[in-house]
Length: 582
Figure (spheres, rainbow, N blue to C red):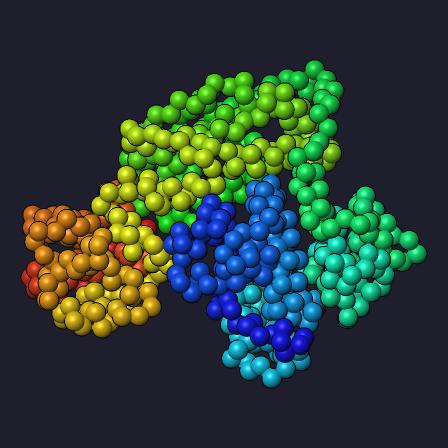
């Protein structure tokens, strides 16, 4: 690789593009970099990945962006494979990886650097470590992990695997991108497996020659004659458009069912009406991943149909720090529209999208024959119908209901944004999401140990020392727990809470102090209330900070065996309290 092509290779820090960030990006399009809860370094990394994948040009999304969004909600794995093809042709680190890393052995980060070293010119190892780390991070946090085998060791080890089960459309897209790169629509099969080929399905996915030959036979725009692949004059964009269109195409002719099949079909329908999640099959995980998106809190999703819209939870009165979501599905247009009402603190959501009654009948036919005969052709039709429904659902509007309030929104894939910006605060109205700076950085919401947080929030002698200790990194953001929504401090110079302040932290401190004023109570049991509405603390950096500050307030007042607790006992107590929430 030429030195000029390597310039700026360290543009991702150590962050790869992640599945959980895609709904955020798809929701806000051009404005995603302004409306997000990522850290500033992560924003810069994501912008670089999107640009290298051809999804953004400058600050504007490209036509490819919307194509990838549609494909993502239909077939997310394939969408990531298309992104991988684009990244090979746009990202120096992806190209280096595919060009040099083989399929034979596990490599850790240093092993990958050593393998690509021959093409690094005079670049130092320190320059290449970040992009290699970012690439591995993307494998760990996206569906691109499927192109690898991950070794379970302390230092992540990866081994490329041969993907022979690629969809023929992905194979075709990789070939057309290669053709555009080398400016020829006739490619020798042998060339694809040589060292000098700048792309193609083998270089990117390791597909065997035997499997590739079979895939080429499935592609109407490609012919293979005497070892030469002939591509017609279409562009890679047209190939992608054809792929997306094909995912919504299936025969509408209903298959024949015998009397026994009809009886089974009726029972299947009854089962689906009772438990509509059964209809989703493997797409359930996809759908829930789309809905959870970049939500700061975990979503506990239950399903019901508009025919029977009631949902049940193990403990209807205790959601802990999570948000309970009831997804009420109008499976087909012959079912009644949703009427949303539910228990307290349960978010009821009903998407507008539904199948036609005729399509649902066709789906039941094919599911019945699939389950009774195991015929994969029926499974393929059923999968297409369900995938199209999920894709329509994510792109549709929806109704919501929560604690006596209701509303409508335009896109279901924006649900996690709505939860973060508005709805979460209607459940946790004394929770940390009420502070804009805390809500604005999702890294604060990741569970962990965070011993330094205790040092800062428990041991700081005064505000000046606290400011010094929280002047950089994530500590700069978590310090806003002691600030109001406008950035003003809610403590005096000695870190005592100001009396005339309305603030989530002060509410939590006051309620806790009031509880302990009643007598000698078990702090682990008594402080479980902080993990429930309206507070919703959990074992993330925020939870560690709040509990540390509350214990600081109780310092000198908590007694054990007739003596005051010592500082190190408070450290252990803080950990026990947070573990008690789990």
